[in-house]
Length: 168
Image 1 (cartoon, rainbow, N blue to C red):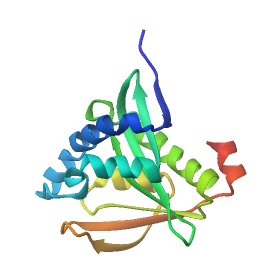
Image 2: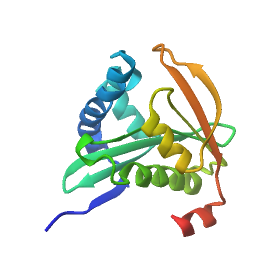
Image 3: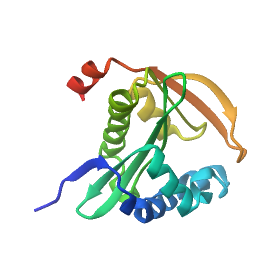
């Protein structure tokens, strides 16, 4: 009998697993761009621990193993920033990324009063772009990241917290 993947808020005890998962998951992005200095690959464990203390971080668990994660924070203007969405390579393509994205949106709406969501992905990351467009995001710009990767910026409006929680 198989186990179900459960999405929940991350705890400080998840830091090391989250750090290792992020490193594993972003290898394919680094390969796609020929750039192994992208932010998720050079982030330190201490920095991940700091994000766990300040950001909304959700993890997907399969038993005791962290197999997916996403982070969210809110800017002063009410924009919920979603970042570092990742799913273990063996579980990709089964809707887990979409579930994590919805968890981040719901958490940012309910707990941080986000009025819109913003995220970014590399311009060659077609599967990421498909996921975000299916979730209602539209391109609002482009920029070059500090690591030299061309990023597509995407946004969507946040529904009212009550509406969002009812539909999630």
